[in-house]
Image (cartoon, rainbow, N blue to C red; front, side, top):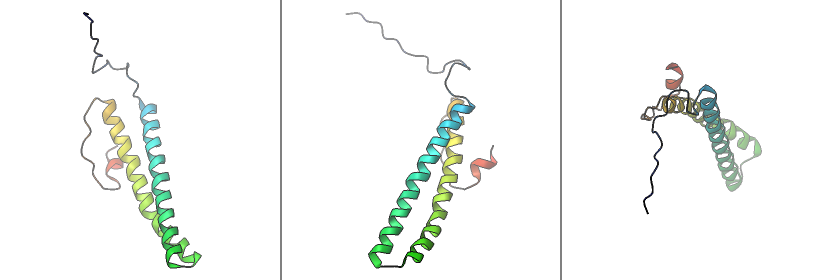
Length: 110
């Protein structure tokens, strides 16, 4: 049973891989939308449960939801920048670096 094992080229030549600006945009926007939806749903469910548990009025609940939207928006913007940065590094056949948890870090770098 002699079978030949075929191994793909680990670094395809430029122009032969699926990464491009549009592909990076699609991947980064998908991750960003997923983060926004999941974090937003978790925040709304937590605030709603907290307010119903302690019997707080609806206006307090709405105010807490507005306050809770701030960290959700921060995390979503950071995720967008990080996802774009990671997709560009992968397109250039580079390793993924350690994340920097600063809101404008990935947008300043271009």
